[in-house]
Length: 247
Image 1 (cartoon, helix red, strand yellow):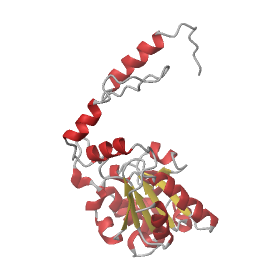
Image 2: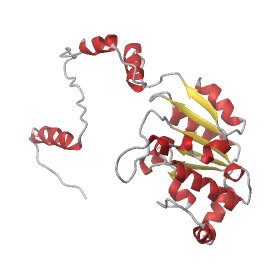
Image 3: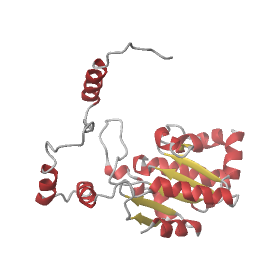
Image 4: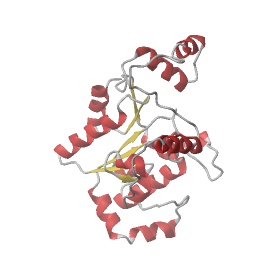
């Protein structure tokens, strides 16, 4: 699906799950929709599952926006405490659209809690209190992490009750905007869906010890921060100028 087609679907007001591989333009498209909503004076709540992801759209975490914090459950007493917070009433009264980015890392039970809170504050029994909900992310990427630091795929939001009742339209972006190298794109997509084969290995092996233009040094990627720190400290040690500390 193209970005234009996905944007047209979102403009109809239906709930949407926006997905696609890295570089397909999910965050860019969300910002396009946000601009459209602002131009038409439609209040939108911009959130994400993590603080870093939220900063990409000048938003906040869904946990903070909904007032649930890190709670795993919300009983009636908890709900009544939330209702005592006037800033939440103003926030929910204003909102008409709720965007949640990087939803692959959001636990199913927390999306269910957010859905309940929305219905409570909107005083509306429709899913999410009648808000249009735009979920964005890629289930091939980072899953929710439990206290054991082991991912459990059943924790993904598509297994939540909220997902079932919101019945989102699936907008799968298929265009690639991050790179125009077809061979690289094919390899990345094969790794993404676990279908890499001999031809992909052969293409990668062609790049071993490849000659690069003068002055170009390849980026080194590591799986552990300790290796990254070692590499960075080695490179910093090669700098001959005086060290400066800024606070």
